[in-house]
Structures are given as structure tokens and as C-alpha cells.
Image: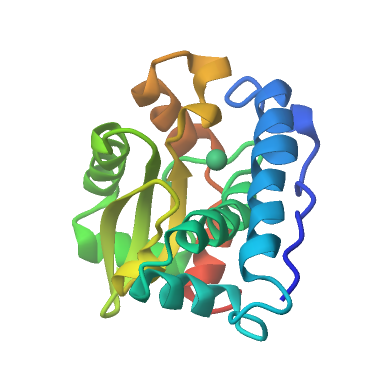
Length: 200
Ligand code: MN3
């Protein structure tokens, strides 16, 4: 497949003050674009990955320990969803029905929120904090660099990018404050529900 940078689903200014236009300009236009360019060089048309879905490529590259593809196609997949996992006026504990069920079975919203933030705080160096489905159940995960739950036998439904490029302009070194703002003010639960229900 040919990988393409998706447009942001909102204006650059719309997530402020929780995520600034400047952060989104660098993060989307520069960082994500670089992953797209590398993904096309490494796993685009003419490569052994041609004709496969991005989810399949993530899994096959991880199984084959193909680190450059894990990094760049993984990050492309992660960012395609990351932009959609946020919206103006998002976050908080008003959950779509399908997600509320999963969260209740997990142990409730407060436990899920605390565990997700803790996963992001304790991911040493660059990586991601996740909610994923494994054997039909909600799990909290963390992964380094460009990895994602697809590579670890689970289906991601929510991810927060904890690479410094995602928060350093707005929060400097305060990763926990960024994670709290993401959960309380930015999450687009509709996209989380769409993934959980297999609609994306
Ligand atoms: Mn990023």
C-alpha cells in the first residue's frame, strides 16, 4: 500500500489549551510526515509488504523483528488513530455504552483512569500508553517507541503518545500533567467505541 498522511480532523487551534497549535503543527506535519515517508520507503509498493493491510504489516514486521518497519509503520498506524482519539471538549467519564460496559468489568472508571495514566508515566523513554482488548476484555498496556498492542496479541482502542514531541512544547517535562489533560479534556470516546465495536 501507499501510506499517506491523513488530514487532522480539526483545526490546529482547536485542542488548546490542552494541546497547542504549535505542538500539532510539529507533531502532525513534521513527525508524522517523516514516519509516512519512511514507511513508503521501507514497506510501500514493491516491498514484500505490498498488498497487506497496515494492521497485518504491524504484526508481520514484529514477528520478523523488522525493526525499521516496526518503528515507522507502527508509528504511522499509531498516529492515524492518535489524531482521531482527541477532540475539542473531549475527555471525562461520560462513556459510550459499549465502553462503559468494558470499563465497569475492568473495575470502574477511576481505576481505569489511574492505571492508564500510570502506564504513561512509567513508560521509560519514548512510547505509548494504551487501552486494548485482549480475549474480549479491557486491558491497560504500555509499549516502547513505535510498538502497539497489535504486535502483542491485542487490539488497541485508545492510545496516548508519550514521546516528548507530543508534550514538551506545552508541558515541558511534566508528562503526568499532559496525561491527565489528555484523559480529562481530550479523549474522543466515540473513536474508542468505534474501534471496540469493530466499526473502524
Ligand atoms: Mn508522536
